[in-house]
Image 1 (cartoon, rainbow, N blue to C red):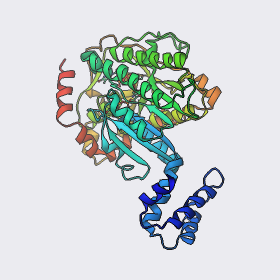
Image 2: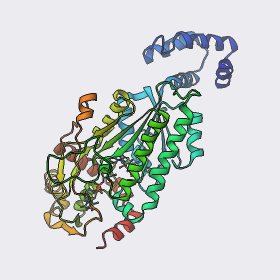
Image 3: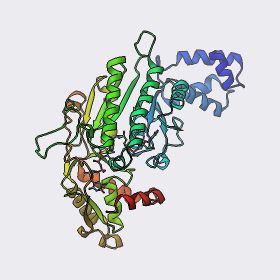
Image 4: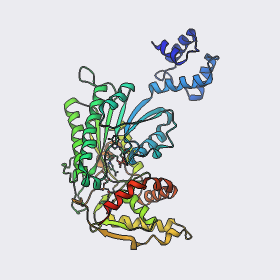
Length: 427
Ligand code: NAD
Ligand code: DAU
């Protein structure tokens, strides 16, 4: 069978060479030996001088892929998912393979991944996580080792206007992902194939709202009390994952993270919206009294935490991830305005636009949670993760990224966004 496969892949290779190749693969498999890449190439050339270089490279990639850890990332074309994929290729390079499944809703953007699109060890599949045939096909055709499940409807304001799509994607979509992974990984005796893991990316919003008292935090043991349709749908998806762990001993983790900021964030969310509006001299809408508190985390720190939880965390556990960086919304606006003033050169015409006069108090969000604050004690103690990026550095890096990606911003704020914005901020 193996011989046939090798022959199919390399029809010009004679049978003797096929046998030699098979023996060579066994002798040099990663289990027994992990030669450097250059060394491996030289060895192959010595053994099969007649093999052409193109075929040899394909064979090498194919061999490597067979034993590579394979990730199925859902929602990888969104904000956190695309940052995670960049982080993972930065860390693991060619030693992992990532399959990104994304429906490309208004929030998904392949431009976020153009740096990695040409990689040999990256595949994009456009599909809906609610489509169980499409998802089980991916599992059937690939030996998936890790699922990292980001795909969701993620914006609270949209959930207040249109809750059903949140229930469909976040609840049904998670159920489909769980079912397909379980079907692919579970053995007849109810145990699971070795070293398979599912990580469900969730939010601190499932815990509801904290009082303004600065000693109150969200812990992993805090009871769920979601308020918005978004957080209720995420809480439901978390409970589904928990039920799979309890009922089927399904190998999973849940992470509940605080507010992220950084490159590639869609400007319906507070920080990129403020940066974009300020640079255009447009009003900065502040909900209510502007004193709601969020705990901001730089997105790369989140990506790192997800990887650490999946590789070093205890299975079946939940880990809270947070920035220890609580700020009122009005403080965030002030910091952004000051940072923009520092970063814009004196001859940049936008400098004159960026002033406090842009701040505009608008009608409050319905059911607006007052304060979020994560206690990341467990992840720090058990895994050694902590938020590394100070807000003043993270916000500079974020603003710098938006300076350098004006075209990206122009593209995502085209037609549909304008309609959304006009409707959302008409009061
Ligand atoms: P996002 O809205 O930027 O991206 C969501 C991605 O999911 C998009 O690429 C979209 O196309 C895709 N998607 C939506 N519906 C889909 C479907 N039916 N099938 C396949 N793909 C679909 O979201 P984000 O901010 O990157 O958040 C990612 C995850 O992290 C979400 O699960 C969210 O709940 C969670 N989270 C976000 C934050 C935050 O601050 N943004 C904080 C904590 C947790
Ligand atoms: O806490 C994690 C959550 O953070 C994630 O689960 C969500 O996916 C993510 O969207 C985010 O939810 P928030 O509702 O906290 O983020 P948002 O950027 O929408 O708003 C941040 C705060 O700013 C919130 O208190 C509402 C306020 N706000 C927001 C917008 C868009 C304004 O005052 N004006 C605005 O125009």
